[in-house]
Length: 432
Image (cartoon, rainbow, N blue to C red):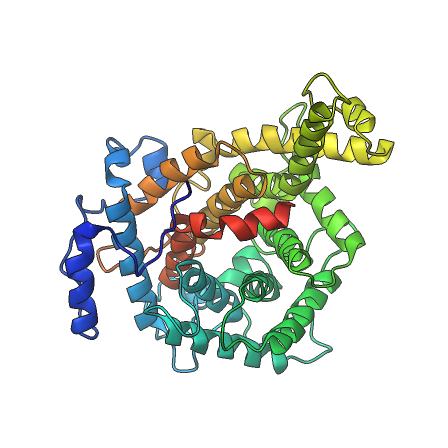
């Protein structure tokens, strides 16, 4: 039975604190976590440079709910007057005040996704008003975009753009709008949202080069390309028109960065960091890997096959064309090999300490496991969420120690990691 982590439905242990919250307006519940957060870095913890002893005790429903509660509360207070959120300039990574930076769509989309995934709608939830304002900011920004511009925003030089890529705003906003369209929420102008999603899709498709990667890459451009692949698959899953040729090139680029036979990883577009690359390879191959697995399972059930080996030969016997069988078998192999590499401790170390890039890489891996209906996703979730809980700041935020240091962006991404269970239905739909 899957757990539904809703911010307004806490365990009995904290009901009293929740009542106090509603009664006290903007005051906080007094309930505390059972263990205090540790200073430091999740990736150093993973590598054993900081103790991860008893992290499983820290990861429980009570601590998880309280952690998400505090993170969402911090994000609500970080909202700018125009409804958006900002990560700040690449040249001023030292600025951590969320109100001292301009809004940008990429960061705003991540925050909006964290509100949405945590159970808020435009009408219900503690942060319904925050979500509504962020949506309004995003839609207005897209609608004011010039048709000639390759981007959806005139705000340039942000941490997210410089580190992930120049078109990351369209990529992450498209991801959010697809999530929004999938929900039948009262108060949503779906026609308006669909128009804006189409604009984002167009920017992504035009920004995809002949090799399948996004142009204008940042320091870790492979992440922008991987997220673009995810955004196009999500849009396609909710019925938006997506150029299949572009999507196929995108998948092939991501899968091509990892060799399932030798384990060799091309890190040229990933700042030399294996974590960034293999998380994209896992995500890009997840949908086809699931189809390969399900095709073989059905063929066995129907008596067409007498073994469950996922090979090109068996996939052909199951009814796929030769070219499809070869592609799907390769995706299956890339997925299974790359997912294991992505969870190795030396790879999890990433750049060596935590930045927004590491948070995104972990999110990509976790969502990929859900897209593929992988039985190993729960172990990943328990392992990763327990460690993320331990490095939350006492004010409820998270922040990076390199590159993407923005507490707004890192807090939103951490909440998305902790609440990934809430989007199992949508992520599974992407893989179907």
